Image (tube, rainbow, N blue to C red; front, side):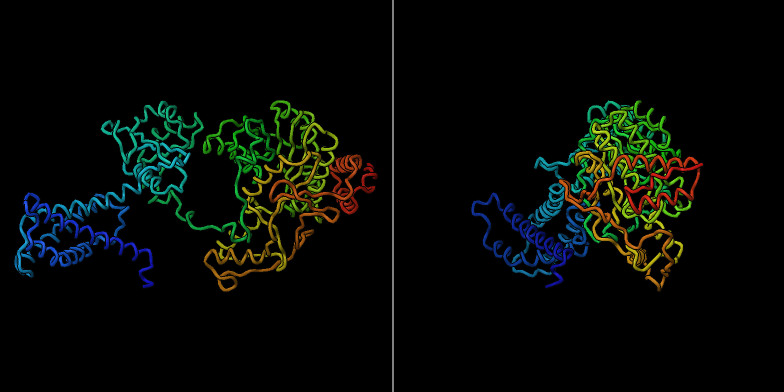
Amino acid sequence: MSRLNHPVYRNRVLQLVADGALVALTFYLAFRLRFLDDPNGLPDRYWTLFLQAVGFVVAGKLVVFAAFGLYQKWWRYVSGRDFLLIVRAVAVSSAILVVAFTVIQPFAHSLPRSVAVMDFLLTLMLITGARLAVRLIVERPSRSGRLPKHEVLVIGAGSGGQMVVRELQLNPDLGATAIGFVDDDPRKRGMRMLGLKVLGSTKQIATILDETQPDEVVIAIPSAPGTLRAKVVAACREREIRVRTLPTVFELLRGGVQLNKQLRDVQVEDVLGRDPVVFELDRVGAYLRDRIVLVTGAGGSIGSELCRQIARVGPRLLVMLDHAEDNLFEIDREMVEERHFTSVESVLADCKEPHRMLETMQRFKPSVVFHAAAYKHVPLMEANPLEAVRNNAIATRITAEAAAASDVERFVLISTDKAVNPKTVMGASKAMAEWIVESAGRKHPGTRFASVRFGNVLASSGSVVPIFRGQIERGGPVTVTHPEMTRYFMTIPEAVQLVIRAGDIGAGKGEVFVLDMGEPVRIVDLAHNMIRLAGYEPEADIAVEFTKPRPGEKLHEELFGVAESGQPTAAKRIRRAVRETPLDADWIEATLNSLEDLVLAGDEVNLAQRVVEMITAPGGDAAAVAYDE
């Protein structure tokens, strides 16, 4: 009985029962139709024959159907080739029936030839018709008024295009619906395929796009020439419509489409041990719609994801600023060529240059600025403290002052948990950046200033996950600094959505918002999980080696400082870090001036000493000691 509960066997049993009922019905109808004109109806001897033979006929035909493999196919996926198989199965079963009644004569009365002929025709009609009806019912358009709003126009009404449409019809969970075909074959013009009309040829693509206004276009002609693809893509790009295409058979055979990328990578659920953030970007990012938004560090891990999500909201203009040419080029190309979002301006500039930043702010007049530009690699910053302070602290002051002078409505700093009780120059420089934003919030009430603090993000450049993955691919060893080291983790899209949400809450007085990162993850557990997910066993197949913490590296990161308390906000997963005693704005200004003098002089020794004094006793007299040439 437990075997019958399996979906496969349960489906076969249902098919057998349905076919058995249909075969019995056709056998009965064949007798009734044969004697339809007889005033006395069905003679008693033939009624007796029907009752004696119906079980024999049903069992015999079902055995033949099973022998032909009719119950190894689901009715909802029946095809033209299956119909030919059904015709053969019905013909053979009817022939066996005639032979049995004629030669064997198992019953007292013989079967009329007309009944045998009508039984064959009715069986063929009902068996094929039932399967076709099931498929039509499954593939029928929904009439519930809840059709997916994402509309897809398919280029190519051949087998590839029909495959795409059929998949969309069979799987409403994909959230898309096909609205029509475009095909260059003149014989298909105006025809309907799978219920959808062939709207015209690719020569008319611009007109068709304007009339149908699809959300996406799928080029479903694997052998389409490059000129055709270019024509379709150009027309879609002008209208900011997304385009996707099926790979060619040649690409599949030569490995142009990398099948290994379909393998399962490490999922966020595997390493975070918590439910990921549910995306509600349209709601949380509504304040960015039809606004001018500037993102600094737009080519970095966080900055580029900010650009992607902001573009989805629909700003009037997205200004992407970065001083790294390659990174800026890549995000610009992705926005325009892949995402077909053309309301972008790419600015190659350095946040450390006051005149350039003010010029950019005055030129574009952004309403919202997300300041994501920063140096973040701890060992590099320890070796280059001047650049850490210059880029993370001084550049933040320059950018914040330029934003205030240009009447920017909101300024959001991307911070890090390393700014909490910092033990490194990088952490200290980010702590200073938070203080700068806090001071600017009190100094410039016309601009809403805020900082958003969070921990590590998965898959960012230099993060531990891609490093571990690379070590696993090379066969190990996987290096972990300490067996007890823990870190907070969040995916980049999760963090960015919460950053966007944080930009719309608070009083704008330089508050620090802290993202809920869940529970910290032991790095050694993360390494073991990644090794297992790659199909290996830790230590047996790939070794895990412990090194030692780098200078200033903490075993456990913190989200709140010793002088801070966490308070809830109106936004889920976002808390406010409140300092017991706010820092004096004049002290912050004097400290930064002192540090800037040391940076300009290139005095790393005194700079490091002043940074330590400042972090150890914020608000003290570290700024009182000016640099003496």
